[in-house]
Amino acid sequence: MLTQGNAAQRDPLLEARDVSMRYGDFIALRNVSLSVGKGEIVSIVGPNGAGKTTLVNTLTGLFPPTTGEVFFLGNKLADNDIVKLSTQGLARAFQLVNIFPDLTVRETLAVAASSYGGLRWRMMQNFRRNDTIGKIVEDTARAFGLHTSLDVLSSALPHGKRKLLDVASALALHPKVLLLDEPTAGVSTADKYGIMETLLAAAERMNVGAIMLVEHDMDLVSRYSTRIVAMQDGAKIADSPAEEFFKNEEVLSIVVGKGNH
Image (cartoon, rainbow, N blue to C red):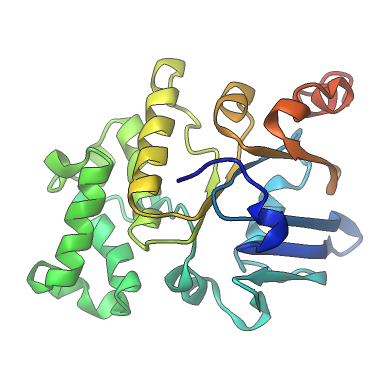
């Protein structure tokens, strides 16, 4: 169950140690260290350009850090590629709907399920005859309320369900750590809580160990985070439990952009 705890300090699932990222003379990350442990929902917040997405790209192995190290399940990420990591339990939402708009919901989920089963793309043409893939697809779709839309084109889904399908694709990999970048972006206020409740319930049902969430919506951050990490100019400026974080007026003013130019 995803609940607040001290697991990150004891036995982290995902850990960054003094990670920096440079692009020429531009420093995108400055000596960032953080841990994510079992049961945590860690939100990464900060103004535009703070380094939030760069941090997630580094943590998921998309870009190796210029200096510092990232560890997943105690192993250094340096020798892993992003696809291999996803099959080992570190996944982020694919946004496959944008990549493959002509796939149905069933086919979109089968892409991820094929990777989880170690079958990769070669099984896509025969996924309907593969019981393992079929079960993952059905179970994942049901967890997200997409089971009645399996043969609908992904691009034809309402926006809210497309966002759920993005997350469902990542969860079809049965990750130990799930990284999400603004999963409710573009969704109406009325729908955003429903989407979050659905994805968190599905994550618990599918035994996800921890979630890292890049999010600008502070209502969602306040409601669902167990811990909050604030970034500014590529540096970590706060890392605290949610209740404590929202008492820090100085950090809050930076995060929401007041006086930040």
